[in-house]
Image 1 (cartoon, rainbow, N blue to C red):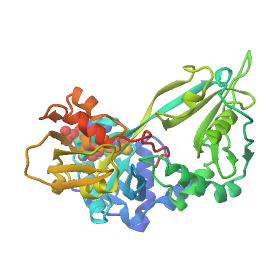
Image 2 (image 1 turned 90 degrees about the horizontal axis):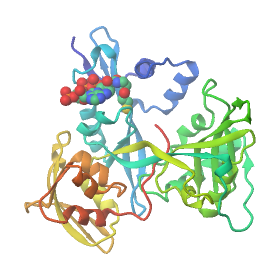
Image 3 (image 1 turned 45 degrees about the horizontal axis):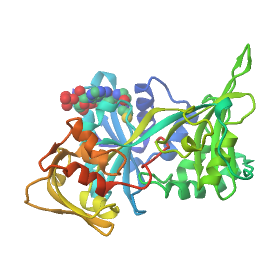
Image 4 (image 1 turned 90 degrees about the vertical axis):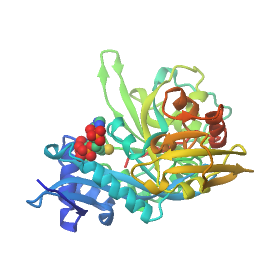
Length: 400
Ligand SMILES: CC(C)(COP(=O)(O)OP(=O)(O)OC[C@H]1O[C@@H](n2cnc3c(N)ncnc32)[C@H](O)[C@@H]1OP(=O)(O)O)[C@@H](O)C(=O)NCCC(=O)NCCS
């Protein structure tokens, strides 16, 4: 059966959401449909339609801005709503949709694409790599004491309307502190702050005015030994050490809770170095943000560098062939970029490996040791790592 790929029509949006939810084993209700519709950019939503007019495949994108090492922001296609109906899978529909999404991102002048992968093996073939690893931190209340000098600031609980006024500015400020951070568009906030009924206990919003906030839920649990609830942190954004301490202290000392769990945290979350009882927090691997370079000149020209050097990279890229081939990566006094060259390569690597190391959060030497790239000159991978190193680990926390 032939499938036509094209931009979605307005009246196909509901079918897009239904297909996406169905491939994840669910079904949207009216609230969910409204929420997704509110966020979706119709002109960036592609559909595959069968001969009966049914939507059997879809992939969308959000027009995000990503924060790069050094502070510049570039256009970032946030790939979303990827789904192919079970009876049409493994016939190349996702491959065709990704080719079109990447082509469109390039045409729009975006430097980067990013996504959360439901299953890690899917997206490497399309040039994406896990560039910003995260951890899930679990901390028992009994071991949550923090090293804090002086009094700890008090947080205030806000209702949704107040939070809507206060949180976006704080989110922007903290996002700017980390490479890889994606700014949350204004139209995402209402659904972020007011999760749907049925998504668990109500969300609490605690703010430290001007300095940070934490959103969380208390999941109650009762054992024979007493209350043993879980505080599930949705988002904790702190502008500095004092705010970090105050917000974590609040989130780890909620009455009737036995533990606090915070997912998709940066691998160098300051909390881990703030505990009196160091080593008691469990930090396990969580979802990494997957990154793909769409425009090498823009991406490499927009970030800063930690070391002066020059290396020739031979890049393999099947989806964006104009990005493939040999590039000289050069840096001097912090700034740098890439330009075309015919010189012999120091390193040969695929677009997925380049996307993985670009933000400085994963070492090229580790990928070299894993056989993921070829090194033609001794020490070239380590030199690339020194150029791309960042002061803090790249991090992006919210799902899209
Ligand atoms: C993931 C999904 C979109 C793939 O769509 P598809 O049309 O079957 O993909 P394609 O036919 O274009 O496959 C391209 C390649 O990716 C591989 N691939 C696709 N899905 C894969 C998966 N889940 N795990 C490993 N490999 C996968 C295919 O085997 C194929 O490999 P090949 O090129 O070596 O033959 C589809 O299976 C799906 O809807 N899954 C459930 C929802 C989901 O996980 N969405 C992704 C959200 S991030």
